[in-house]
Image 1 (cartoon, protein in one colour):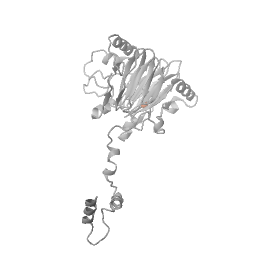
Image 2: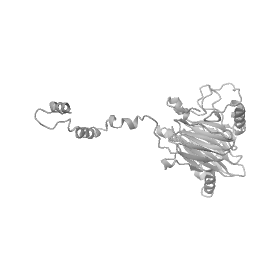
Image 3: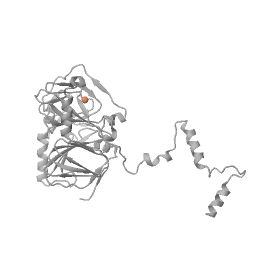
Image 4: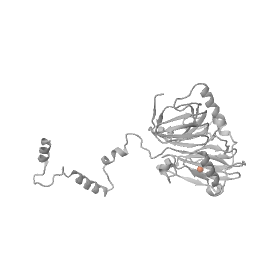
Length: 364
Ligand SMILES: [Fe+2]
């Protein structure tokens, strides 16, 4: 201690004025104030909060039960038409980010309803959309001239700048989950949208053309190989569900994810969209998953069955059409009381393209 005091004394000002070392905090604060006037700030004060050792998220785990969601969405049918609303959608707001129209930090989620006889008019936007059909039969999404008629469990994509409209010629309301990447697009401040005069697009192809042409193990001549989004509009549940059953029978059941497939662009095997990816997983009856975490915050939908997902210290009990969010880097584990199917969407392709995606698998 004596040597330290002596050292300080040795560095003191010869004229006996205040020693800057004794007054270091005040000197630094004065300096910060001066540089602040030039819109500058010291990185060393914020370094650990901006370059964090592990992911930090504002996103909270949350579940929406379909019983609540469906009755509230049906109520909106009497409040506003699809035409007037453009899209009659109730936003699923993450409770930690209320008022920001997002379910995770990068993804919007909402429940869209279209009543019999309604049309949601044609428009297009830079944000890409994924739709996962929850309820109803026989409404359609028209994308770039193809009307894709939708059934529960179908997975429909609307890529960047693709014109699209929706219509419901059936006799029952149709409800689906919309997931869009606009929080990410708006982070880049790169949003454009266009609203057309006409309500509906002219149909130039038949329903199912895109899946038949591109999703059948063959490709027509003249396909651009560099297409960065899938040419398929509707990945039907009727075609995907049996694949999960075969995976289960062949024993290909991952201890964390169950028997799972990823929806892909059939041209290059990449994700369906550059910004969002989706998967479908079968958890066999009695499945007890081990802990898993990854840097992509994920929106799950229970398509069939019944089970639980532990997210951190919370346990969500889910059944058909319940929707829940697992935040980035939160350990979670699924369990299934009966054969159950989970659909999931995340921004994993965007993170992988940027080289920042990570996962952690706990030992099985
Ligand atoms: Fe849209």
